[in-house]
Structure formats: C-alpha cells, structure tokens
Image 1 (cartoon, rainbow, N blue to C red):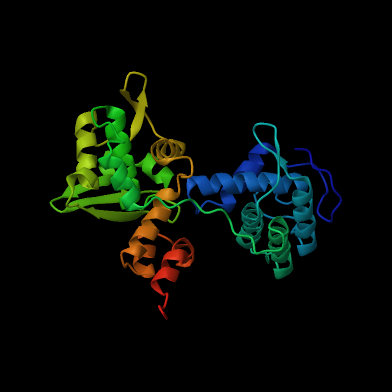
Image 2 (image 1 turned 30 degrees about the vertical axis):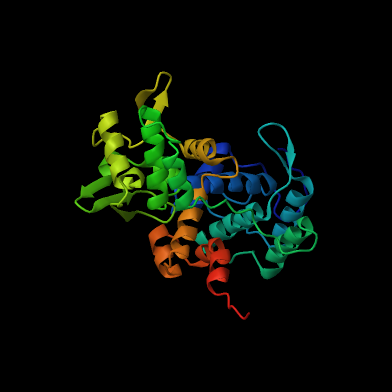
Length: 331
C-alpha cells in the first residue's frame, strides 16, 4: 500500500525491503517466530509512513514524536487496509496496540525514549469505544474447549482410531489440551521432545512465545481419554523415530508424510471439523484454563501450567468461572 503524508519524519527514500526486514528482526529477536513475523510486518508498515525511521545499522535515526505516532494512528484508523482477498478491512484495537508496541520497542532498543504516551494509547482506547458504541472494547475471546466436551467427542467415536488421521488428530487434541499448548507449539514438537516414564510424559517445548519450558502430563485413569496413551499409540502406529516430528502431515490415502509437519492452522481445522466452527486454535488453552479453574486450581497454578508471563490472561479467560465460585447465596 502506498502511503502519502506530511510529517516531521518523512525525508529521503524508503529503506530497502531487506533492510526493513532485518530491522524488524533486530527489534523482535527475543520473541517467538510468530511474534517476529508480526513485528516485521508492523515495522514495514511504520517505515513506509516514516521512511527515515531506521538506518543501515538498523537503529532509529529520526525518532518519532507522540504527535507523529498520533498522526500515523489516525491514518490507519481512517484508511484501514486491504486483506489477501482484496476486501477493505478496519484495524482492530489489539492490532494497533501491537503496532505501537513495535514502535516503542525499537526506540528503547536504540536507547531512545519511547514516543508512546498515555495520550497516544488513549487514541486506541477511544477508537475501541467508537467500534462498540461507547462501551469498553473487549477483544473477541476464543470459545473454551472444555474437558467434558472432549470426553463426549471421544466417547462418540469422533476420532476414527482405525485410521492414521484419526489416531493423530485425537493425540493432537489431547496433548494440546492437557499440556496447554499453543497451536504452533503443537506443530513444532518432535518425538525427541517427549520423555515417558511410569507415571506420565514430560514435554519439552522449544522456541515458545515465552521461551523454552517443560510440561508434565500424568497418566489418566480412563485410557480412552489418556493423553499419554494416545501419544504412545500414535507414535507406534506411525512408526515415528526420535528425530521425527510428532505430528507429520497426512496425505491422500491416509499416508503419513514424515517430510512435512502440521502447521498451527491444521490444529484449527481439526478443532472446527470435530467440535464446530465456534472454536479456534486458541480454544485449547482457554479451555484448559477454564476447566482447571472449575476444578479448583488457583490462578497462580494455571498461570505456571500454561506458561503465561502474568495472571492477566488467566483472569480474563476464567472471569465467568470466578464469578460463579465467588457468588454468595443470599436467598
């Protein structure tokens, strides 16, 4: 998209595509791949509007002011963007918040004060209220996939375990839920990331959004809904080796293609095909939090189990459960 504007920063030619991509990676090199990709796209957008924002050494050469960023936000809100299908779309407040976070991050990494002030953030907050007729904007939350829903599906033979696809998909859902994994983390797992013992399985997740970490999933009493059992059955049936991806692609004829592994989008498709279109790839983590809170787990324990950096998202996901648990019967 060609952007034309007048501001204090716009002088000279736009940086080359390679420089912008490298600058984006420099700004976000502490984050997971998906976060890096988002930051990279954000920085491309910012640099198209402010072409002298960074230089060849990938540092801020012309710092932005709060006024610059406010004008930029106004442009994005007014003009929106065109999606991959050629349709005009409006920016969501969450996307604008991520963009200003990118701007703030690259300033800080160059030891320059961030231009993101309360006044700048107020623009996004006010925009959110405009979208919701004056009410506080609430991002759409993925529908929670609860343990009871998974159990019912398994009991109704939603997964045909006489096929490779059925065995794999059942293992994907169970491990994604029980280990509270992000959908892309599921796709990146290798057999070597699992360590089975007599009581369960230790799962090592590498290059996650919050860094490397381990999860432990214990054996379940019911073998039909046991994550450990499902994983072992799948690995044996698929004849996977230690170096294999845990969840390779399955192609025509129910054949396993060990040269490719599933993507996060595959997890979403499996969820929607099995449980309905209301669910998304994030439903596993939301469902884990809701189920755990319903069963009496503390917010702190859920936060640790899910690898969340703070309790904010856990509290958000479990808000309705907490309200029920804290309700006082007065009649």
